[in-house]
Amino acid sequence: YAYNGLHPGPLIVAPLHSLLRVDFTNQLPEDTTIHWHGIQAPEAMDGVVWATEGVPPQGSFQYEIPLEKAGTFWYHPHLNVGQQVEKGLFGALVVEDPADPPAEELVLVLAEALDQQQKS
Image (cartoon, rainbow, N blue to C red; front, side, top):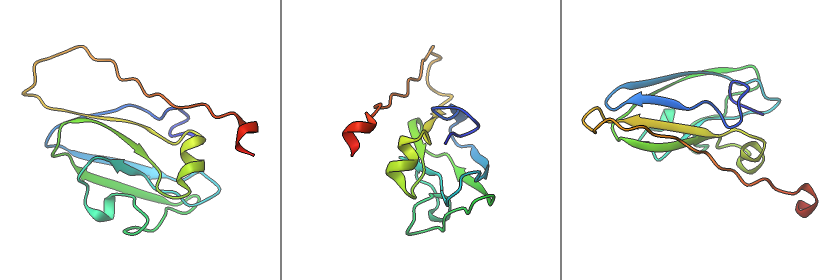
């Protein structure tokens, strides 16, 4: 499980007050979504199970989210969350404010590697 074959998923960097467009095709054997954690996304674009249906295997969906808050956020699925995130479906989203002074930044995404024997 990986977004674009990357674990964690690709770093998405976009300017504040832009429209984020993500063309998503589900290549998993189960339904999934992308939830944009911390972003004020329209409900139909938020990827939460109570507002949207999952994208079925081989199905596609275009996420369109106005970025109205600068910061560093993360994205992940909202169906079968524990297993899909643990298998690698997560990544970082940085919304940059052009009014902020330029800075060299390094985005780190950390994940706990669970011991499979401890889970049983």
